[in-house]
Every structure is written in C-alpha cells, then in structure tokens.
Amino acid sequence: MAMTATYTSVNGQILHENRNGSETELVPDPLGSVIQTRSSSGSTTSSTVYWPYGETRTASGANPTPWGYVGTYGYHQDSGEMLYVRARDYRPSLERWQTVDPLWPQEPAYRYVAGMPTMAIDPSGASPVCLIPCAPCAACLIDLLIVCPPGAGWEECVQGVWNELPAWLKWGCGLACAGCLACVVRALLPPPVRPQPEPLPQPPGKPQLPPTSPRPLPPGNQEPPVGPRPLPERPCPPQTGPPVRPPWRPVLPPKLRSPAYVLCMFFCNWLCNPGQPYDCGPTFCNDLCDPLL
Image 1: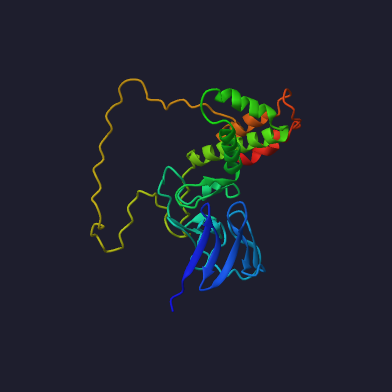
Image 2: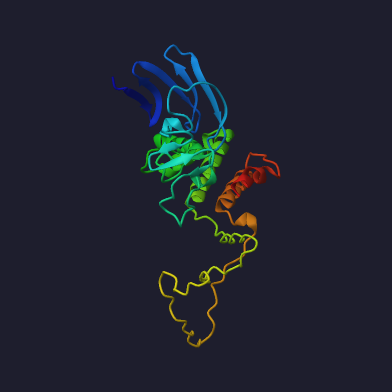
C-alpha cells in the first residue's frame, strides 16, 4: 500500500499533517521552524530548539514528520543534514547553500539570507524574505489603510489616527518599519568586494613557480606540452595623452558603509528626539543598530 500524506496550511504555513491516518500538529516559532509536534490527542511528541542557522540546539522526542527548521514554510528534510528548499539544498551544519546562487557573482555564491538568519527566511531558495521586521510593519500599514481608505482627505485621516495612537504603538510601528526597510536594503545590496585568496604554499623541496609559468618537462622528454600555443608577446603601444585615473570614491568611516546601519540610526534618533515623548538614553540607538554592521 502506497503511503499518502495530506497537509493543512494557513497563509502558506503547513500546520497539520495526516500520514496514513496518523495525524500530527506542527507548532511553529515566528520564523516558521517546527519547535513542537503534537499528536491528535494533543500530547507533545517532540520539542526542538534551533541555533540561528538551523543546527539543532536541544531536542527531545522524535519528530514524525520531515518538517523541522523553517519547516512550516517548506524546508523539507531530505537526507542526512540536507534541507530541500525548492530551488536549492541548504545544509545547516555549514550555514551555507549547497548550490551556487543564480545571481552569482553579483551575490555571494553560498550565503544564506544575506547573513540575517534571525530576521529572514528563503522559502523559494532564490530570494530572502524579511519576515520578522516586515510582518509587524505590514500589520501597522494595513490597519491604517483599513481605517483610512485611499481617497479625498486620506492624509488628514492618517494624521488623525496616528495622533490618537499610544506612544508605545507609534514607537513599535516606527522601529518595525525601520527594521523592515533596513533588512530589505541589506538583502538587495551587493556584498563588499573581498580580496582574492592567496595561493597555497608549495610543498618543501619543490620549486616555487609563478601561476603563469609553464610546468617543466621531465628529463629526456623534449615534446612540447599539450595545450593551446601561447600567443607571442606584443609590446604595448606608447600611451598618448594624460594618464587615466580611477574614479574618485569617498572613504567613509566603517559605520557609514552599511546603509542598514545608517537607516536604523536615522529612524531611531528621530524617534528618540528630545521633542518626542520617548527617553531612549544616549547609547540606546548604538546598541540597537550595531548588529546591522
């Protein structure tokens, strides 16, 4: 008899599995990782805690389903430590994708969710989604659109609703939208230029050959090496005119090289302005935004 499984999903999340009559309820965390499985009677059959990149931190019981780290969004336990994520395979123990990013070399070849595993997931295997900061920001914006539908007097309606909100809700919506914007900007920005790795040292006792030098022939063998014939060297024509200089680029301090950090500091300082009803303290913004560097 072939094994059959049916699933129940809510807003794209798998929350229930029925495999040949054996029902399992999946309990996710905010990122969609299965932290508990429960039987049809409601008893807990397994509990799991994960490290940020998906390694199992603690586990008790046996998960009867193939869904674990970000499992409710489709990360499928394939074989061993491999997770199948539609377009690619992800290995949590290495914190890396196992196939090259389709956008390489514009994007790092194997980087996972732009280095933000506590804020973003990648259900398609091709583009990270800033789930944690963008979900509350979207809730705030959708609430404003429901109360104030677009049309005449929309700006006055939004301003009136915003003025009536409690201070803690304004602060929370502002930080959530700032974090969402910073997460999206960081995910879209190209990675910094890294220097090429140095060549590996040769074993002792062997001559150190430059990378472009031909390999010496064995004694008594005067046959030319197999391969394309090197092109004859041609002298470069004399340069005329002024020398070409590379374009000038400003040298920014390290903390200004991250747009996510700059945006976070801008919104945080705006919310913590002395004219606002928030007393954040002198080091609050630095402590909040430093992880974005």
